[in-house]
Image 1 (cartoon, rainbow, N blue to C red):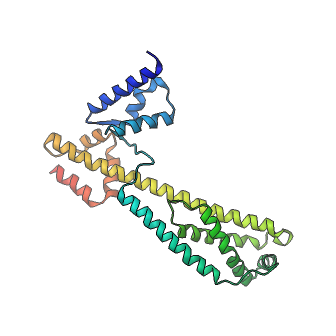
Image 2: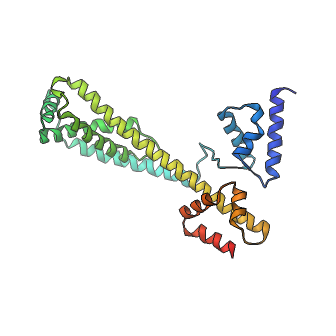
Image 3: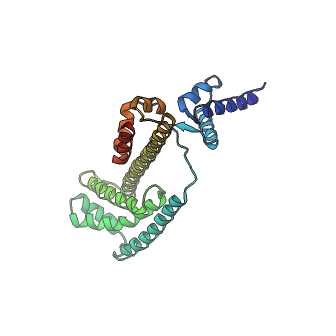
Length: 263
């Protein structure tokens, strides 16, 4: 039997094993089953996705790039419409600022470096369109465009503070411009990473709550009685403390449902 045939057979066997466990298997169980194959992480993810396609739950795994539900598609479309409306209004606001004069920026940089507040305010005006330009370049579905622009503006104002006492008088306008753009981009990137990670954690927690809720129903139906915490922990392959944490974060409904099952 060649490697490909062996692998296909093992896929069939792990499917049967999961089906015998109420269509459920842990990531650890899958890895142990295929440990002799020495598979890459990407190959393991493909196996998880295959099991999900067979209506088998892989504990703790949530497929990335899922097909959006109609509700999620609607939310994305609405966000897109809101962003376009925001962009239109913001550009109208920027158009109200007076145009930059030749040589004005270098003069403003010099004055701002000397501590002139008005010059710093005018520099901020001149750089607002650049912040918008950078935000549009870094635009992503995870973060509202207005939030990117706001973070970019904050990063700009903080970056302008470095002008005072850092030898700007001896620097060319282009060098300072590069520095400011870099600070703006870094500020926006940090926001994107923070919000993307937060949404990933929220999505994972939502999945854990759904899994826990389903487990409560299934165990109660199977046993015909109240479910104990140790039974729930064993079934979920999690510690009791971890389960309690999920219940607390989910709110009173799930916790009350568990308490009801105990009675």
